Length: 214
Image 1 (cartoon, rainbow, N blue to C red):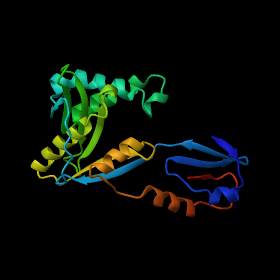
Image 2: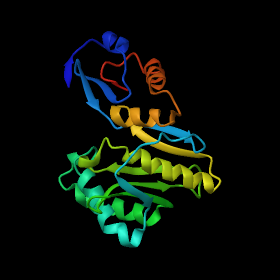
Image 3: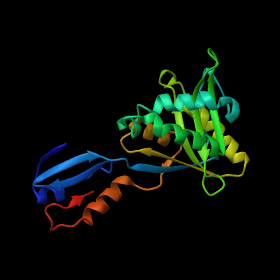
């Protein structure tokens, strides 16, 4: 997205943390950028009860690996940042394999009617610090059924039993459904993204016409 705008108006333009603002040859260029929001929640916080038509259990990598990898490849190939790649599977495949090998905790939801894995979540970083919720994924036809919440409940219960008091996660400011889900499940933002954007704007150079801002 680009449009003509003076340098003075650009400096006064409100900033959104999910967009990059640049002024080149008298035009302002707006482009989306991946800006992760960092969130945390206490494992002692209760997770809302949901009724799901699935068995939620811990991941068994040897037997579940093929189904989980297929689920992640199929779902994430159409999501940013992979959807813009010519061959997303070439990038996704090694990432999925690595994270399945290094996950310190994994949970899946298995549909009662078909016996197929329809949701998965992994946890990394438990040994080095605050564990991080990763690859939280629900198949498209199984969404809005409380499966992600069921996975979160098992993860927090397991971590709490291991003496771990906090769980971290990330999402994007542009992913409104994900952000809403995190906040309604007890996660809180580690930093305020709008405050960071305002701080970056106030510190931006004011003299050069072609300077990149944001």
